[in-house]
Image (cartoon, rainbow, N blue to C red; front, side, top):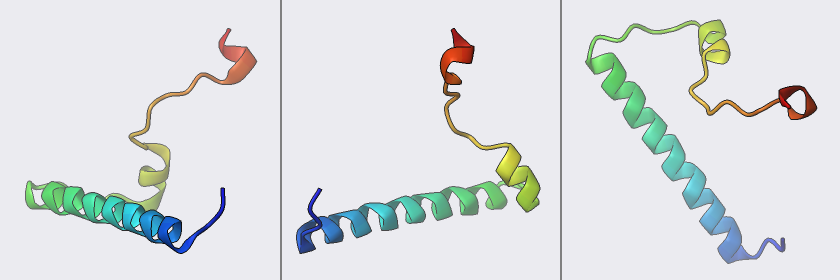
Length: 58
């Protein structure tokens, strides 16, 4: 992929919007009584879809 000025701007806008959405969700979580989690908890309890582990999943 060639990085044209338009492509760079679109990528920056996409990432910035994702950061804003993440910040909005965090504010909502804390506003509704959520407690801050340690960095270890955040790293080990990610809310991402489970992906099969290649040949072991078969």
